[in-house]
Length: 489
Ligand code: NAP
Image (cartoon, protein in one colour):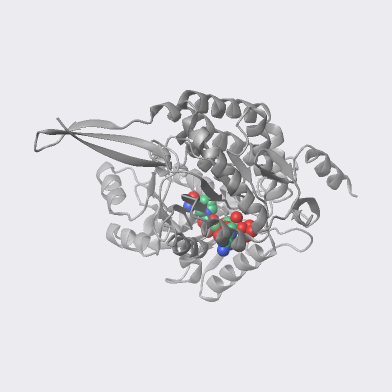
């Protein structure tokens, strides 16, 4: 075992690798496990229980059995448990950051950022738990009154991706628990350890057995079909790719489960000639390089006014070219490995295609030799219209730049995508900023900022980026049904 491997094993020594079903940690029925790999060198970090449909349905049994009591638990109590979980995660922030960094690859500083960001959803929804209310209203025609009341939708199934192993879980678990729903969580098979650690914390602070169940598996499709084929399940919340999301929406039709879909993005980053270029370059670094570009919110297409395109591109290339690529746990590393070999090939293929079409490489462009799944920060200028790299989610540290001259042209180009998650706009003109924000067909707009997400904001997309919102006042509504009572007076 290398020194690095033994340090990793030490960091992971306290992390559960079994399933959490009805408050008990248990192995898969047949003892099956799967490997979690370190993306920095492909070594095995841990072996985790590989559940089949039987264990998944037992997890749903546990969630269904706990549902009524959890829904009847006082909102203040539910909120306080979430708050206690928030405090416990805070107290163990370094441990969470190391686990995230090890299994996902991101640099430790970014992993710490994810802990702060992801944990905020527990705090925010601990506060929202006591603010669920209905209304009392006079019928407009007079003569009767209308009462509405909110109730938890019931047992939920959560499927999360590998790119934010903590935050993608807390964004769902926080509001669900606050609303009074029980849950079965299926984390991504490439990064299950963070979710298992979170489940340990939830259990330790006193979340009752069966309220949160965690099923790790490599049989995601079968487990999804089994759970969604069960009428006791009332809600599915998925964060991941658009094709998988489409399939899940179809599956939800059988029992008409409520669905929230946080899917792919293809964010335009529009820089007008009057933009503060220093701020725009800083914003581009965050919007592009957060999570090595492996974020649904990552700037995917840079549309820059022709008057400033060369300068913007040169400054961005200088900043991108000066980043240090390496193992996420090493000092001074800015950019970690991508999640796996397929990710590197897919990014390489998009870059090669753009370069064949005439794009100029200002920095990066060639993956390094050797172990691990690394790709260098890359800037491409004058990417041809319609290049695949501007249509597909890159999910890597590559910034493709194209030029525009008219505002309408920029808005049209920005909107010409099946996705509609987030757009970034840089301008100092107030009227333009509002006009363009309104014209953009996206769920979120970053106006002179490269970062939009926080627990108090309604995060989510339109079009092929899905529907439903996580965070904000809207987030808890995804887990509430409305009952209306008609009252003649
Ligand atoms: P993915 O392949 O769709 O996987 C996401 C999750 O779905 C994983 O847990 C995966 O399990 C599971 N899964 C795959 N096929 C399934 C099926 N047929 N039935 C049930 N579950 C299934 O996506 P990814 O590559 O992990 O994540 C990247 C994508 O997520 C990108 O498109 C990104 O934009 C999107 N994303 C969106 C948001 C947002 O809020 N809009 C946030 C983050 C990421 P396995 O791990 O076992 O394959």
